[in-house]
Image (cartoon, rainbow, N blue to C red; front, side, top):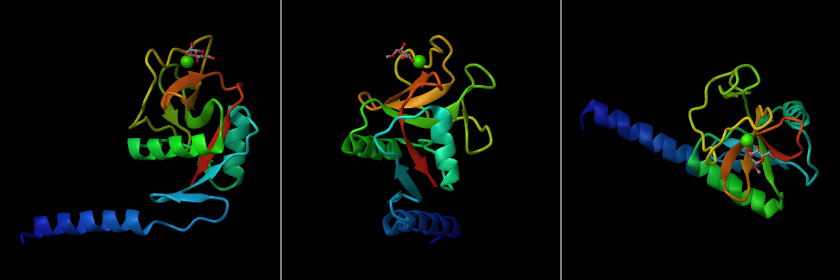
Length: 152
Ligand code: MMA
Ligand code: CA
């Protein structure tokens, strides 16, 4: 095999192994891919309370990075019985319409899944939620109450 093909095979296999072998998570965190996830109680809280809760547990508010993760999160949320959805660790508090990640120091979003007509900043909405029913995203006032998921 050419060395490039060989490198590609090794790279592919290491990704497969990383995903299939999985990682260990401390109870009550649960694993998916290379991360651990904490699902909040049924109590709903504001964006800032959710953010602080995740930070204090050594994680950060959920940032959905791809469709695979999004589908898994969606299933977990339904299992948990959250009624509306969850906060995501994205916001546009600094520049209206420019949504950035909380954890990666204000980086732009590589993956997004906005609901039709969103984000619409209706009455001033700077935080982001994952909508349980439609599996899409909406910008929402940060002072609203939702369930949350932490990731680390
Ligand atoms: C509507 C829509 C959204 C907005 C929420 C606020 C239900 O959806 O206008 O864009 O964020 O209302 O509750
Ligand atoms: Ca909105």
